[in-house]
Image 1 (spheres, rainbow, N blue to C red):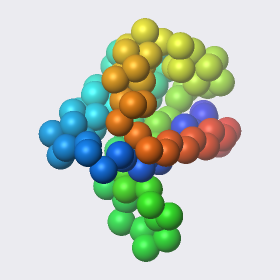
Image 2 (image 1 turned 90 degrees about the horizontal axis):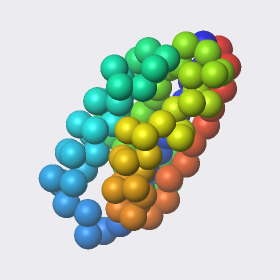
Image 3 (image 1 turned 45 degrees about the horizontal axis):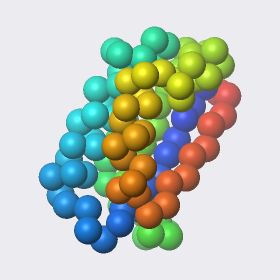
Image 4 (image 1 turned 180 degrees about the vertical axis):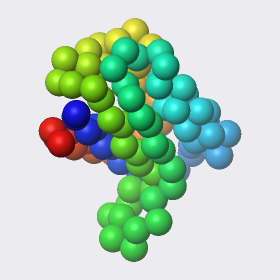
Length: 96
């Protein structure tokens, strides 16, 4: 199994509605991207957040599923809309 983690810092002008849409669309990737087994996304509550206010974790069946995730058309459509809203995004992927 492979884990994909991500953290977001939003631009100041991003609305609550935009953040809610991002949450819905991130969660909706499960079931649309083959091999994506589990998706979690929420507000960061860590006191050591370094400005990252939201983040998530995704579990993939195997390395091939993780590799296929990034270029998947449904993910790319979300990325095209989401990235201009983010001041900073960080990712960490690892094998369990």
